[in-house]
Length: 216
Image (cartoon, rainbow, N blue to C red):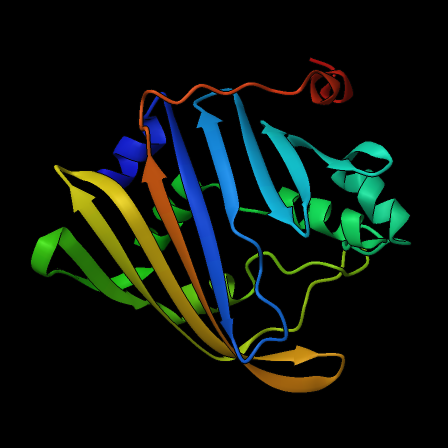
């Protein structure tokens, strides 16, 4: 019911943070605003530079030092990979792969098992084996078009949903798996937290240059 409420909401805003245990770097927080049936604007700031992505239906563009680029243009710049070429392009490509909370919430509910209500309106459970593998791969790119990353091994996942008056306020996903990177197996533990706010009152302004690139 709470997942449907967020999916059906006229608009909402969110902040997403990700922690990777044992990783060499920590992804920058992501800020986002979405309008039902319209555009979603996502931003991320690192080292004083803000990258913006705009998603509208099946289309998406992101800001780079060379202007706004589609995912396909970023793949071409990376020689067929999904990384976007230079560092700015990589950040832009990563933002375009960023899942929207409403879609993630619906899928998390579908892929969860043994969900139980606890204290303070928190509902928690485990991911199915299929769900753990799917979310372990969340956001991974940088491969030539048509190629997929190797399947995660020993994937496990857990979820928590914070509800207030039947409305989702926060989602936390923790996934662990053994991932194959450059031919080597590496253990990964990633925790992603989405904080939802301004449901129904969020407004979205799409940058003019992004509109031009989207043809809208």
